[in-house]
Length: 203
Image (cartoon, rainbow, N blue to C red; front, side):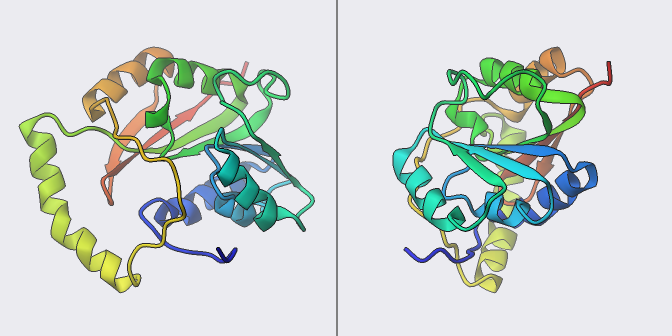
């Protein structure tokens, strides 16, 4: 596999995530970093980037991609169980792209809150399950526009990654986020994704 850029329904959000992280600078944590493409793109914009992923193959690909970049570190472990260097309140920005649904929702949001520095921002691009009629209608209405965008971008490039179906609906995600991250915003986005954003209060 060549270590080039590619486009898919997750990388479509990279530019806005990078621009947001660049505003704060500091350390950035990418949870579920996969083959390291987002880390590569973040590295010129912030002082340090940490990527964590439990998949050995993904981390091996990330190591190849990032071998010549000095301000990136990789952790091959489960975010919910890894010990140091996941100390509390380290990161100005915590990012998770299409990863939250692989973990226990409540436990993951609690840990993300823990490692985020006061004044920092959590940015999650996630997937939700369609259960209600409204969910199904909205997803159905996006089918044709998304296929058109896929064609415009030349199809979807996607390295081998673990696939898991989302378990919680957007309503359920909003409810848990409201309890754990007061003031969090959860908005539907294109490509069957949502954006959860939360600013940790300054202490």
